Structure formats: structure tokens, C-alpha cells
Image (cartoon, rainbow, N blue to C red; front, top):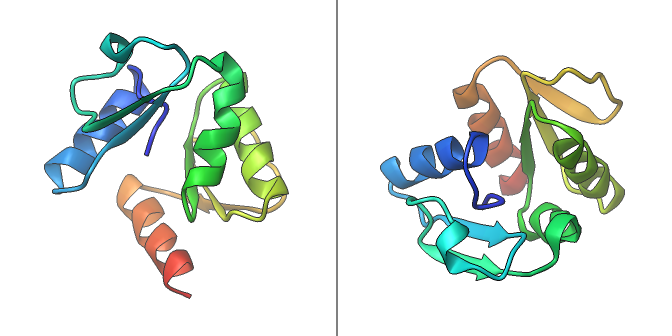
Amino acid sequence: MTGGLGGVMEEASRGAKEAGGLVVGILPSYEHSHANPFVDIIIPTGLNRARNVVVAASGNAVIAINGSYGTLSEIALALNIGRPVIGLLLDWELPGIQMASTPEEAVEWAFQVIER
């Protein structure tokens, strides 16, 4: 599950798709056409940045990859509702985040957390 757009979200979607996963994109707009080409299930919310709540709450764990304030808000929201957060290439050092060195390590740790 990603925010469904380009950049890091598109690369995460691509990786999940190539690994055989079902890719869900939670879009900030009402436009299905804004989803990246790897999204299988498009959820157009029309919520703009408020959709970060939906993104943070929808998974059992959150992997946060360096970004801007949208990523930072998703981290805060996830931690606030008790979702484990795994950080990768983050510019911020925040309490409660398990830092990973590689994408593989981040995914492995996320699976370990949700299996508990």
C-alpha cells in the first residue's frame, strides 16, 4: 500500500508488483488516472494531504523512505496509532522508529513485526 503516485511510491509499487504482491494506491485526488502504472487497486480519496491518515492506518507496519513533510506526517500518524515504523534513508532521527539499512532489511523487519 502506498500513496499511489510517482517517485518513491511508484518504485515501492513496482517492487511489490514484481514480487507478486497486490498493490493498493491511496490517492490524494479524485482522479484514477493519477495512479502510477503498478497500482492494482486505486482508491481516489479527494482528501489531499489528509489521506496520509488512511495510508498510515491501513497497514500493519509502515516503511518510511526518505521524503518530505508528507512522509514525516505519516510517520507521526503511524506512531500515534501504534503502528510500527521502519525507517529507510531517513533524514530525521525520531524515537520509536526501527532503522533499516536496506530495502530488504526493512521488508524483513516489517514481516517480523506483523507476525507477532
